[in-house]
Length: 138
Image 1 (cartoon, helix red, strand yellow):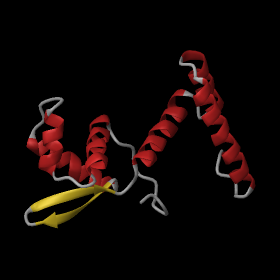
Image 2: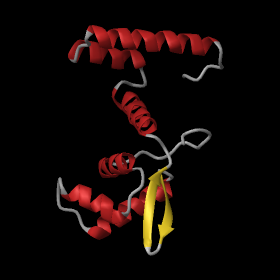
Image 3: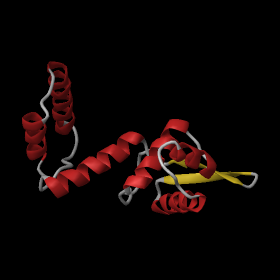
């Protein structure tokens, strides 16, 4: 789902909310999406359709037609979207510094022992993988 695809434009908060619905359902019509959104707030049918069309234009969604209904599926995983949001936040808030992000998490949120252990494992894995592949960072 995520491999060998060009970088996609960022999602707005409303679009990210729709992506969450589509990831949960796997495939959804505009009606399905609107019904889920109505559980939280009022939203017009045309607004949902417009958002879905824009998300497809951006490359985040694709659709197939079933009768007169368009059924939308995600072209990228939830993890890809989270990663994109984090990188944008890292660039905007932390000046692109992963160290500044980690310092903020440690100093202002804190981490449990289990979270620290999992992060150490991820860092060890990343270190091993970076030795075996070309540099990706800045």
